[in-house]
Image (cartoon, rainbow, N blue to C red; front, side, top):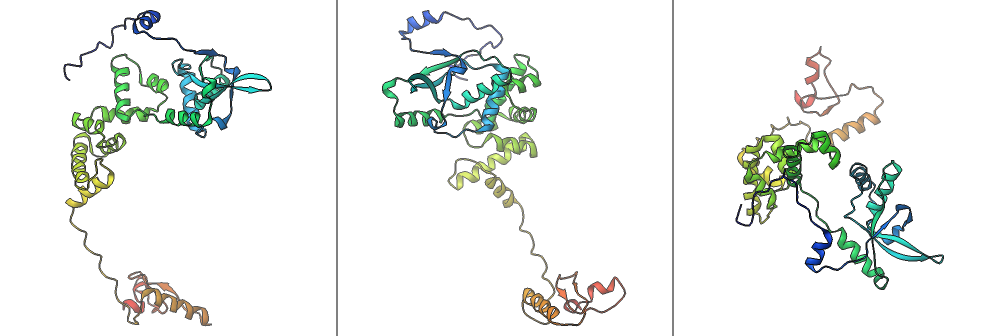
Length: 313
């Protein structure tokens, strides 16, 4: 902590002010933000550069059903002339648009949807494609950031695990996983924040080895990654650290040689051909010592018979 930060009382109510007064003091100007009934919005998939992800729509639907539509996240539309009518078409925010519709079908009252309308002078396909791509270039919360959110909701605001899972639309297993990361040493937290290790890999190592041992392994992995010119630890670096400490495994003993010579595959193929061409009925078995197919065995009482193939006499 430095002189630019200070402790914040997370329980005390936040003093609020007047929006108009704040805008006037900041010299802000107003813009058009329309509140539109959902049924008056239209959608053409061709206007959106990203194909629809059904799983993401399902996730957003669950959030809207539980928390309502976020009025601070307006949809972006443009006006299209259709049969002489001016209609609002969504070109940015299609997943939120579709999720709001699913939430309404599930019985949720989302109210009117905030909409920003694009200036008709800038309704140019190339500009809209660029705009749509840049809006998709966003950063998702990391496991460590989720751990901090869960910790505050649980410890400061007294929310239960079930309530947290429901409001954030995460599983209880996810909460337990990020809880492992939350209780890890601060040095491991710093590695995750610096991007030296992914939060998911850190959680996996903590689950397998415990927090302290995981930190040790990840630090050694970071050294290995640095030696190879990499800035991020992967499982390959952890495996390399482990392999360096372990002696090389001894080579398995060689299989007993066959007196007839040739490779094992050649011997097997030769015997199979002889079996196919011969009218005699032979007793065929695979030697249990060297796994070679034997075409002649002595008819001795078991268990001796299983090791009397010619290759292993």
